[in-house]
Image (cartoon, rainbow over all chains, first blue to last red):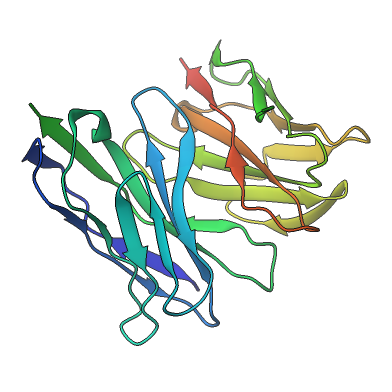
Length: 113
Length: 113
């Protein structure tokens, strides 16, 4: 079945550091890809998405590019802030089915001042 | 903008009791999803409904049942609760036409003691 593999962390960075969170996927078709963020004590918020190969999703300084050839959707941010401290989940959904989300294990990021 | 509303936010039950979790989707959304997130885990898909009919089923125990009502709200019924059912339960909603991504509620934290 479909699956998502991502860096699990936890990761601690200093403010203004560069962030990369690797994410690769396995799917039978061409899924839509997502990054969700979960702040402490809160629900899941969509950070960005891409629905087809070579699409780039971006939001709040974060970017990820849908790479079909490497089945990857790595998340990057050039300069993290303390407010970016959260758990980040990579996820996919199959376009032809119920579009349920399959999540990676999540990565906890802590950004120190 | 209206978001997905879940109630209650917190619930404490004893083993072998029953629990009912409610989800009110974003207006005009026709699809509801339920996910279970154990401590430190990624969310796992339980079940989904489209236009009040079950559309997909994941790793939902037989002790659990769910339905979507005519006003599109959904309820997750959990019986014979076990300690391992302690988790954060998320509801998400989306719309098929025109298509939207899934929006998550803040979750119900269920603790079984």
